[in-house]
Length: 458
Image 1 (cartoon, rainbow, N blue to C red):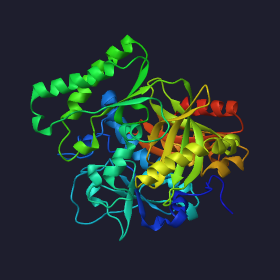
Image 2 (image 1 turned 60 degrees about the horizontal axis):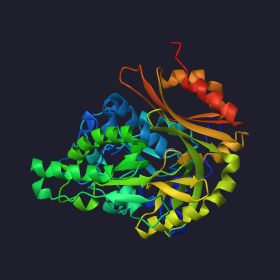
Image 3 (image 1 turned 120 degrees about the horizontal axis):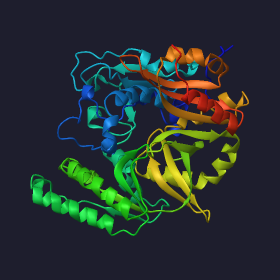
Image 4 (image 1 turned 30 degrees about the vertical axis):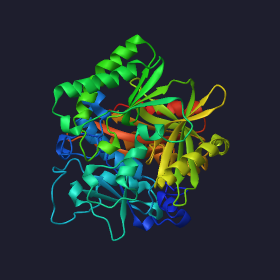
């Protein structure tokens, strides 16, 4: 008999990777955001970088402490439904990401404490390393990552890193045959031999910005590699256009100088301008098998804060059967496109439905999505009569132990699940990824409000 408070999943990534001739035993999951800068992890990345990421350029103050907490929680929440697959996280509290180690110090860690509530038969194999150089894989093993990074260049991948980078870019979606709003790609005409020529750089920046300015309002501008809503800008009027120009020029200055002969073919400085269409957007999560078959995982609504940053999602389990049918056509097209380009594994697409019922793929996440676990957790919640669920990320001024005591009843009943948790060194600030279930939307919102407004009484 399974103990109260323990989680039983309907299926895991291990099960999905084994479908259609796949082999989960050859997969190692490495979850670390390559676009996050952290002084302890080698800010700016290795020299002469190949894979350029700059989604965090607009939120500079969010780095350092908050970024370190993000890095600790990310492998927990992404790895929660891995099943019996190794999940590797980098312990950002330990110095030296670009170190060279004489031995590989794999060890279970408090970093994966959240996994202990998963039934042992499905519990991921959480491992931490102190630096990127310490990551190894077994014979014939390959790593699956959120996004390719120079930090992992010494390791074999499930997908060719260059192909993965191109597929994950907004330019990659724009150049696909998937249904999408009218889209224009503005590529740099970049001569890497002239990178030190300031006049050349400024002329190229002006040319690209002028191309954007010429686009009729309203439109959406997307940087090539974005995540969680950052790096995407809505332009509705001239004031928005001026504000965008002020931010775009320094970004281009920064990114174009990071373009070199090893990454020019990856178009790290390209911009995507897309027609703005009004409608409802649904987040679709699927698994693309080795044969290119789309396995439906979940359809959910996304939650964004006032800054437009992604902070979670909501799923209605009673609607999943009808939503799977409604989005099956899009899921098949997305899976076929990714498979044709050498990809298999978890993926997500943001699908917009306009007033006429037309469906457009407005974003493509060639990786595990933030709400992927809604699918494997469906039975856990619905067996308890909980038909609505939410995942939220929140900062707390208490420890995990204090939070668990305050919500002991909800945790024991399975109504609340801690997907990931991290605490800063002074123990006065924590960051939690919480998934909660309720009987209806009102009860869900009330429980979410209790959690988000909780203040420790220590």
